[in-house]
Image (tube, rainbow, N blue to C red; front, side, top):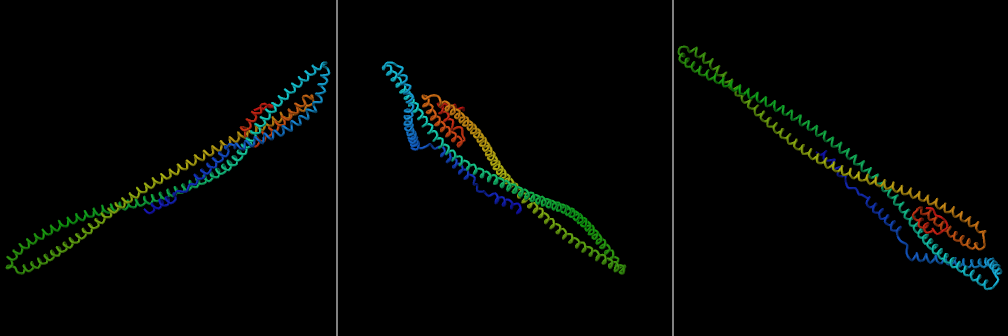
Amino acid sequence: MEAVGHPADVQASNSAPTVDVTPDLTEDLSKQLEDIISSYQEAEMPAESEELEEEAVTDIKEPDRAKDQKMGKKMLKGLGKEAMLLMQSLNKLGTPDQKLEALIKKHAELLEEHRSEQKELKMLQKKVLQVLKEKDQLQSEHSRAVLARSKLEGLCRELQRHNKTLKEETLQRCREDDQKRKEITTHFQNTLTDIQAQIEEHSSRNNKLCQENSDLAEKLKGLITKYDQREANLEKVFKHRDLQQKLLETKLTQANAMLKQAEDKDKLEKAHLLKQTAEAKLQVTLLKEQENDMKAQLTLYSEKFDEFQGAVSKSNGVYATFRQDIDKMSKKMKKLEKEANTWKSHFEGCNKALVEMVAEKALREKEFELFTLKTQKLEKLCRALQDERKNLYQKLQETQLTGAAEDTMTKEECKCLNKLQLVQNAAARVLTRTRTFYHITPILATLHWLPVKFSY
């Protein structure tokens, strides 16, 4: 009984509730993720946007003034050629009225061209402002994306460490559970073997006691039969003695009658009869002593039989206690099986969680591969745009040799193309930094008015 109770105490001490640290770690990681998402999705402050707009407007107005001054100087230089052409055309005309009409027409045409150019300049300035705003937005989004990426990388590392610790803890728990199960099974098998040995010993003892009881019963039966036989023999002897006494009495009567006749014969017969009576008395005393011995043996056998009955009752009590111990052991085994099932379910849940984490990791890797492919495509697109820009620049250089009237337009187009080049370079830098396709497509959509063709 003591050996059976000991492993249950050991298991109770070993199966003490361990402190689980995983919920705290998961809460910290979830809080960090929420902070990253909130910081990434915060909108820009209106004050900052207004300041950026004012700075952009001032930056644009200042170079516009300088450009107007330069354009005035260039116009003055270019007006020499145009004035010569006008003078030649006016000299061809005869009357001054025709000359005035030609001058007025030329002036009206120049005014219309100047107005159209100013409108185009305003449109271009607005579009440049939009491009600058989008550039600032993209830069802010890029900085947020970089911060979020660094934070997410830190979170992923913490998750990997946490997963490693979880794997190690689960493996250690499984090993400990296996060792405990093995110890419990070995101890239970040892106790079962001991119990079986005790049962066999008790059964052998019971068989021996049963055999002894049967032997004693047979001996008692034999003694009883012997006692009955001896009593019958004694009765026969007593009857024979009574008959002898009767015969002796008859003989005494005959002897008394014949005393007178033969005193010598009577004396001899008396002596002989005395001897016979003494021998009969001795036999009677011997038979009484044998009877007393037989009674003592009967008392001894009855005491032994009572002792045997007590031993049988004790063995029955021991068997009942042993049966109770077996029932207790079966209950404990059921409890242990329930605990083992709970641990098994916990282990299966941990395995499912690990499988889900591995699946999420695979999905993240696939998304990363898709992002890399998109960035490669965007890099190719930027290179194609740069090639087209070079071709256009070469064409512009070739067309610079055409005429003086077209010279001013080509210079303005060169300036516009330089601005376009700056915008494209900024977009390419944003592309290379953000590595995402979703931030550059709105810029390319807004640049549809440019002479360069964008292929999506």
